[in-house]
Amino acid sequence: MTTYTVNFASDAAFASRNFDAETPEQALALARKLYEDEPSELWFESYDGMDVNEILVYDADGNELAVWYDDDMHLRLAAQDLLEALEAVCDLPADDTGDRTIPAGFLDQARAAVAKAKGGAA
Image (cartoon, rainbow, N blue to C red; front, side, top):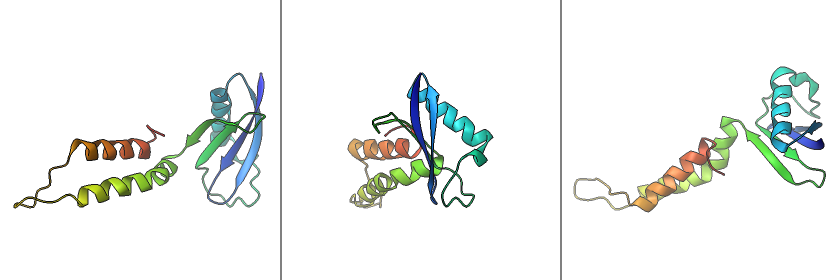
């Protein structure tokens, strides 16, 4: 078993906890279970009841090994990509009817941004 350090982050503060597990993913699962079942066990320095939006698992050297984000954090992390994709589409020239032909490259950019917002891409 390996001891992993897990950080629980909210908009207000973060808490740290060690978990013994076989893999980083198992440590992440234990951390999520702790948060879901016993959130009062986490000692946030300035915690004021806000929901946890990020859980990070680290090894003894401080390397990030596993991560979980809530839906809101996925959206925040993708916001810049989403904005750029929308701006690119909005900047396309329109034909005489006001329609815009969206090139495949723009659609790929938009699809990647949406996937990131939904937690399907890094």
